[in-house]
Image 1 (cartoon, helix red, strand yellow):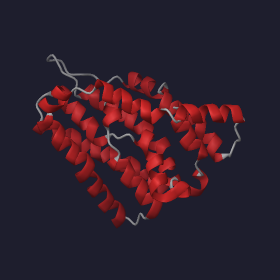
Image 2: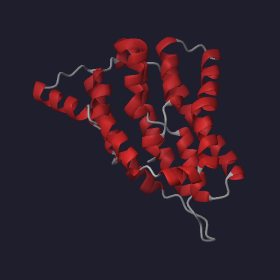
Image 3: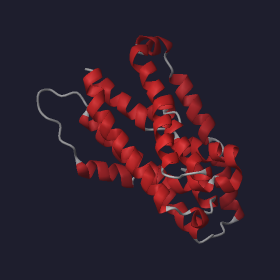
Length: 229
């Protein structure tokens, strides 16, 4: 949450505001999930694994890696389109992840019912989404934060990526990874190669360039490891 707050609050969202870019992100992610939900069950019979694969392909560590990657690629100013995508994609990812995992949870004959109230509660109480909501007015109205508050947020934010990766690595089981290679390897290729290639091709044809094209690239190629974990 501190990392997301820091990234959104420090971005010049008014200068980078692009409804076209935001709608592209929303529609493309939704279409990706619909397509995956239709195709994946035809290839994977285990419902639990099917749900995990769908999430691993459409979802990425955009919240953690998005802005740092954009800064490395385009500099501080060029990262604004990526920061603009955070308030859109993070809630969307969380909603879709809950829906997908509920739809593909194992059934005992009875049809699973999607609890919309539970999904809504999960979204509005998500610390990542709360952080974005709090950061938006700071970014849009350039509200200065007290030095003590800002330095505390920066200190905690700097820990986010290392701790996430340490948790992931500490729980990694090589034997489990080897036993699932027939599923995880194709899923990784779709996630890291096929999906970004398709999204970028469509984005270029629609006229996206520069930082906006970079934001789309990062949105679709950011690995899903921490999110899946």
